Length: 234
Image 1 (cartoon, rainbow, N blue to C red):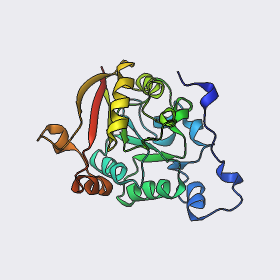
Image 2: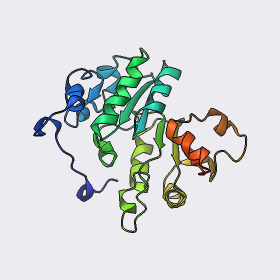
Image 3: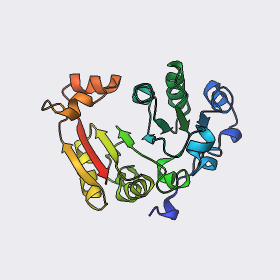
Image 4: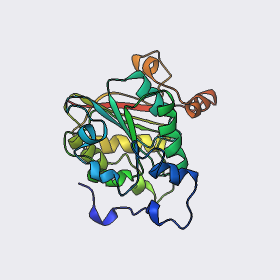
């Protein structure tokens, strides 16, 4: 359960003293597929019906922390019969993400400016299918682990929001974060299918199916090992 005392507060877009191209695009050009922090929670329990105008049986996936949207756009293009919602706090990457996906002509994705620690305000139980968390901020300074998004409270919330037969995928280049998160996974109901300290050490199906973003390619080229886990809600 998410601690009410630790709910983060973020700036309200409409009250910003100065708007820029990205804040304006959020509430204008992409308003049907990009939702600010006030509009996003209005879709709770209604993402399929109100946003995508589809049946409840259609899969709805989630990506937490989309960055510039490379994986997000790849997913939208590769899986046209699945819907995808992304979470991103920063305006520029948020707009880059939805713009990149829309540029491919796909209308099966949407994005929210929202904090992952408030995710229970965005989705109902059993509303989601697969969840992707790729390279989140590792928060490696001594007093910062409490800010890590892959923690037992968030994982437990995600588990309840996912439908049976769905998976959660987590990647990070931070060994410390990964080992810490493994202890967090143990405190949840997730069943781990595969975990590794080096995704590229062996020629596995997980390596072959992995989509490399620009930054991940740089990490690998530099010899940085990619930590990876795939866990299921059975």
